[in-house]
Length: 290
Image (cartoon, rainbow, N blue to C red; front, top):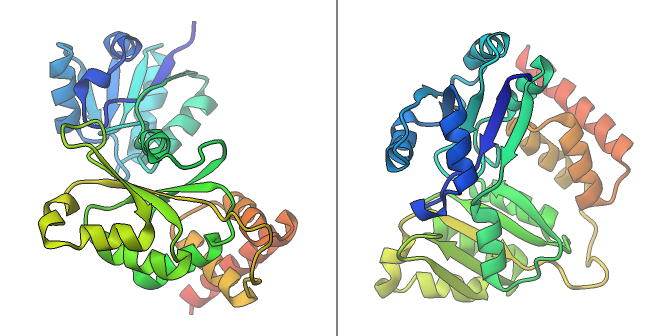
């Protein structure tokens, strides 16, 4: 039997959401790769488990690959966890998993909490088809560019929102999506869990009231209804397409993923999107070498 890599989903707030199978996997692992060992230690203490914790975050993930090779050679099991929720969903772990597959680890995903699904099903919006768009950008111009690329998206859209600048981000989105139905989910699974369901402008107005300023603390997941119109109102011009690809490259998305995204959002052939992305990447490399 080969070494195993357990990819374990952990609670996003309420420790009672840890599953019996997740606890069993953590107990059997020889090493736990954790995004923040201080955060994960609290979970292990709650489970009354004593494990070798090794940090594995976006700044040191590459340096942990040698350890992974050693674990495989010694036929030892490893567990991969993030601070909360499911690893790799806007959290570290993708490189670890890819390397583990190449080494020959048996990959064992352990299902569990994720704010994406909690927010989606609690929003009341259509959950039959949806897209997860990751974290909203910080800069207004990048938010506008992203929203413009998604304005004709028919699927329900789910975003993570950093714990700062929520009001400004909602206002910018409302400029593009207008009065589109939406939901802001906050403090998911915690004591003060709340779903704010209304149009984007109404949600902004509600949270902007003085008596609701306390609600602006914590982490948020935003759900926006997809476009229900049968035909797009306007075509996205070529310059917007190039700007979108440039932003995706800056966010270190792969050429393959960018091409697939352009195919879905702009209605272009995947091969054309792939070729254009490579051209833009080469242009950018050329500029940086000047």
